[in-house]
Image 1 (cartoon, rainbow, N blue to C red):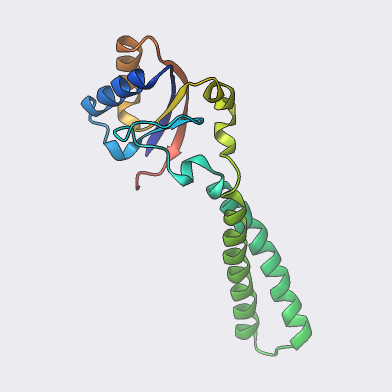
Image 2 (image 1 turned 90 degrees about the horizontal axis):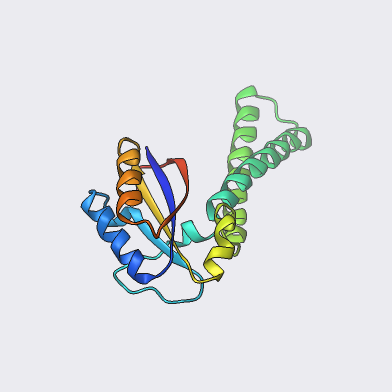
Length: 171
């Protein structure tokens, strides 16, 4: 598992220095992202992806739960309406309806979530509006203390703003 570390940086020069420090600490470039409000970042600073900037994931999670529940109710309603006899067919109808409801709920809610800013990043909105740059670094759990110590020692201009665990290892 990885932990996501959040840092606020005052300017582009500090962001480039932080990127170099993370690369020297053997954090892959695919796990380092920057976010700013308005100003364009240089191409060597990878910008946060759509999944990190928006509420797609949260929307999909909520949509899956609601969609599965509604699909389950629809499946039970279908059983009542069509009065099926065999138990295997009844179970299949309910399971398929719940799965279809879950898929539809995830799709519809993630489309809506793509239009909303990430609710986890709302704490940084004020700082981003004043020109700060947000660094999101996904660090392996065994390296968190080492990376935090190096960043605090070598970059006093940076402000550590928190850590989030349970970031998937893939992408």
